[in-house]
Image (cartoon, rainbow, N blue to C red; front, side, top):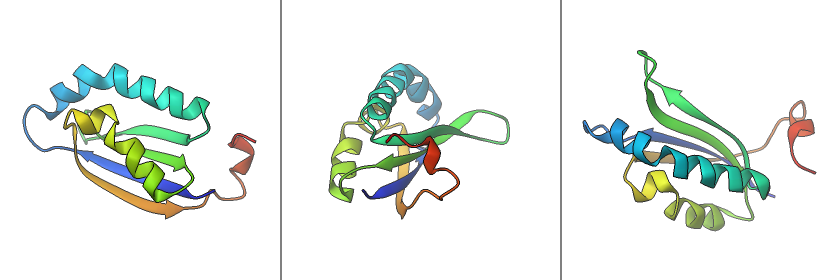
Length: 103
């Protein structure tokens, strides 16, 4: 099944961090569900040099890019305009790490 790295950088306006914190619980719940269903392999917050959250990196395994795009349309950080820029790159988990993937 295709895998994708999603690199999402937060919007640059002053309210971006506040929006992130306001909907973070909903974002985490969405990630938890995606992990439970085997769609999300990994996720982490990106940090600025001063340690503040400023984006996200996630690895997904989904049927297609179109399915991932549909998922992201409803992602709380998208619908609440936390992320300003999203890059999606096809990838493949390396052999050393496949033991961590759901079977």
